[in-house]
Image 1 (tube, helix red, strand yellow):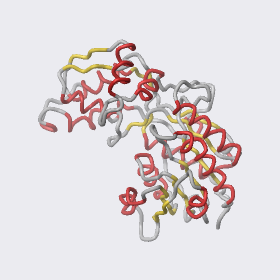
Image 2 (tube, helix red, strand yellow):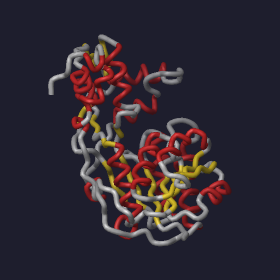
Image 3 (tube, one colour):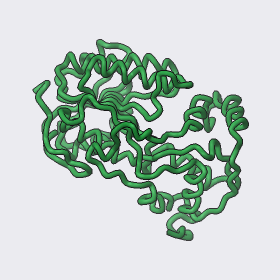
Image 4 (cartoon, one colour):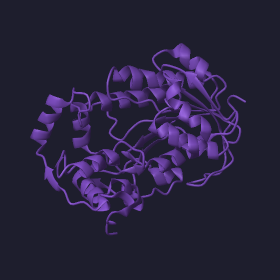
Length: 330
């Protein structure tokens, strides 16, 4: 039933049954986070409606559920009338919409507010809005400002929403660790942009568990903002070095001065396949570490797992001769 309370004990990294039979709408659920979150929610008994501009991109989620557990809807967060249809009957909503190009405020600012307004009108019991560490109304990138505007708009329309600010996310299928891994496996000399910038990489499945916990118990987690970092902070250079060691490779790393990195991003960022746009360079340089002033992943009942727990296994495919190559030292 729409608006029915979703409550229960915090489940941490385990699965629970308090979402059993509930309809959870994943707005922007066709992407990387949406696929991992879908698995977590289905394991807890939820029914899913994956809503995005192009539902065909989400069809790979269909086999993750049983008959009738996954459905799809088309929406555009900049068009409120499409949200009303997509969120009808929802017990819970997760907003995963994000972008690095285009009108960022329309999508992540005003668009996020549209999602919250529609969720409130639908009588939704729980709303989780996924933002990002670094959201800042006074930030020097349109991305940071749009993320901050989205948080404000969400809480204005749905004060009991849970706002999550994750750091960089990693997984075997991510586009962060694998970007560096592909370069290290290909090039003998690796230019390193913003070598001293620090991150707290968070396992995407731990984020999914945190989202699910917030949906299960909005009375405990609603109306709060969380910064979600992993258990360790590492620099970009250290990340590259650890990936190389896991591959059993010894490339030459060439840390680039910030002035040169910024110039390269500015001159080449507009090209298709460019490693960094100017905006991404600014975000990279700023780093992505939790401030420590807000509750974190542990406060959501999740024990975050470090990158080192997985890296050796995930880098097997990048080693020379793959599984039959030299195994990296532990």
